[in-house]
Length: 219
Image (tube, rainbow, N blue to C red; front, side):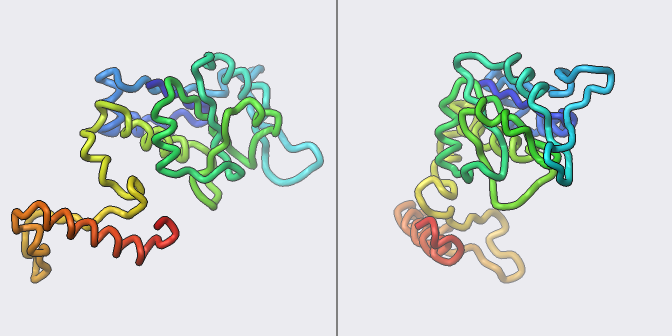
């Protein structure tokens, strides 16, 4: 899988690309992660990528020329182009599975007050990770890249993702590890029983209880 991120803040992705899953996937050839600096496509010695909005208003707007030139430099017939913006559809695990089947994702990161409206028609979809405002689309782009990459065959053990929250309409059951007794807080006996069917039933019951309590909207 190839993921190309268009941003005016490429330095934000340095540590992200060193995280274990991403770094391991890149080293093994499972992931080709490319970060493109939009400023490289801005004319002039100052490489201005933003300007004040027509009609007045606070903030600065990303100009369409450098963004679209950067996009055309990396786009191919196999590419699917995403824009990270508050006006987009809210991102879900179902979307992560869908995007994980794509050959090439291009993620455009907004910044400042927004971007020129003429950029949006060049995207295949607009995505939001939640109903709040961030400084730019860089963190949302990392969310998309991480959630999609971990679903790619070979990046993680299949059983590691099969029973996670949101995979079956429920939150994941509680997990425990050593010690079995920590200051009087004990691991449920069923998990120490060795009875796999009883453990399976307990985990399903706990998933239902947790979902009803914390996220009844997804049931």
